[in-house]
Length: 197
Image 1 (cartoon, rainbow, N blue to C red):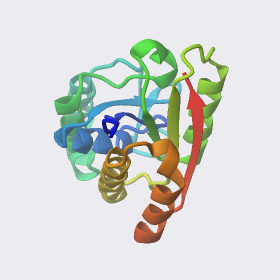
Image 2: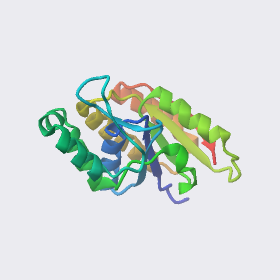
Image 3: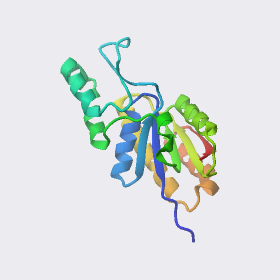
Image 4: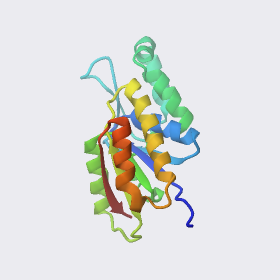
């Protein structure tokens, strides 16, 4: 019997630092080798209004964002959950990273996205690479609304899905069954595609 696959995951969502980092934190606690990335041009966090987001460059440490927002309006950013989110993020990794700028970080067995447009961006990026290794990567989209409650649910669903994938000898042979069972159990529609490194 062949050894079961050990997964390596990338959690990807546009410039959102909530959904991907919630899943990253949970998967890391459960012993998965995990990375998380954004796909936007900048990191955008809610501001005092929709027209006034807080914008940071990728690579800006979470602690620096936390200190900046705490100086600006500690009550607002505590009440809307941004300060606790940044505190959690800084315990997981130093700073947000951009998917497109970290293509050389290695290969992943599974890439999870949390919105369809990001799923499309990741697939486009993977298809535009040379694919010299011919190593398959499973890209799955699990739609998760961008709020703290849904991010927590999405993180647990991502963990469940990763555990299901890791439990089989070969996901390539069982992927349709695994995803169909997941959709029935959780009443969530998944998109998936296979790309190559």
